[in-house]
Length: 354
Image (cartoon, helix red, strand yellow):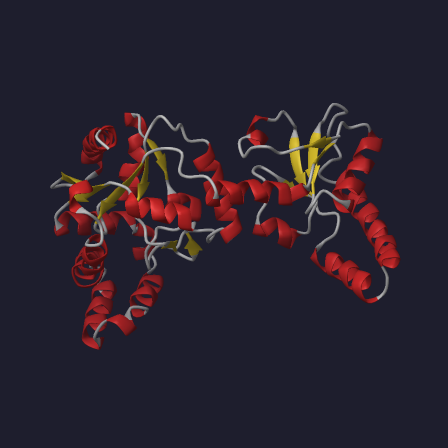
């Protein structure tokens, strides 16, 4: 049987015991269906070899070589990760476009006695749904942008808004990056397609009757580009700005970026990347602060000379009459939930008066 994908939410609601992507590891790493595992029937080198034979010699020879490789790799999976699965196990299998690779593997699994289904159109059918969500579908909920200068605890406050009944999408979590020069996260960023799949699912599952809050970002989060339609909606959305004193923000950054400050070589290497933008003596002063482990002082100087001026220039493009300001003198952990409560009230006020 073949399953036709009609919505992005469909995979999570299905009752299969596993979703198996039989494409080569490189294809799987670029993007895959949510929750899928990779059991390749051709590895990267084998796939390239079969493709070369297909183009340069003959399709028949390529299919014969491919069939032998698929059978050999399927045997490895049956003797390995699938060895102890019971007779009632029910997998969903797909490849690039629902063709020979997934069909061959599904046929073998069916012969074992498992109830296998294929994804009609393979990964490409999933990707079409993702592209349609990001390019053809307007954001389903009223959008509000949570703004504030660097160090305003926006990401942490965003995470607290759910406890106050507010929908959120954490773009930085989806992109696995904190959105600044110092923002690299363990594991690195997903591919562009991988990010888009995660984002599309998040957008598709929004409740359109309730507003959704996203953090203010540039059009890129690290190396990931935001879809043009979402970026345009963010530029047009009302904004809530968290306003906190420089010292409070410097203290917060020193805590929030402990992973960066804990690696002095990494910290100094990132600071050095600012050389094209600032005088040499300023860069040397920042490196000296890093060398002395004065992370609060470094954060304060970086914000005053680098980040705050850029934020103010960027913010000047937006209409101030569509902005609510939430002031706080402190960004200590104990103070953030009351600030989140005030932000939630502002979200409701902004979206009920639009």
